[in-house]
Length: 262
Image (cartoon, rainbow, N blue to C red):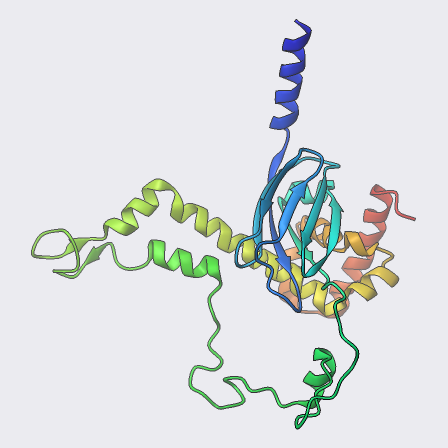
């Protein structure tokens, strides 16, 4: 009887976990194959080629991110993460720098940040190439286009069907299987992540930490907390930095109070 109750309790505890979708970011290295481990549940996963991952979590679980090229990072799951069911994690490069050297004839120092300020960046735009300013699709947008692209009825000879045309079976099967719906949700999630990322970059983690008194490790959690407000979307679309900063200031007071942050 005791064993049965324990099994039921364990099952309920596992059922209480939700799937947290995340995106790992880095300013220097690729973020594929980063180990993501929920040390509270003993479960883990690995990020894909674009830094995306998904892992089951519940409140107060500890998630550890590790890879050879990055410093290990630990995050504690809070309510805001569970509500949004997504998170952006920025990893810091491991300190493997060599002593400063001068590379001739370009006068490079080996410090990427310093060299970028002194060297001309060669990209499609600076070379004047056509379509240089065309916005590239994200991985999710490309997958959605492949899964749900094209007309329902293709022209004759393009697939199975009568002489008048062919049914787009690929599109139909993706709709029936739910793949199209899943990819649409992923695209919507990615767009929200971009908004949060742009907001974080615009005001910087230093400003959020020093002026709003939000701990560095909880910066993204705070922004997800702000996103839950019904006025957030309209405010971001206004592109008014003064109003956005006032909003963040007010929300920071509530966030610190609810989370006992001095």
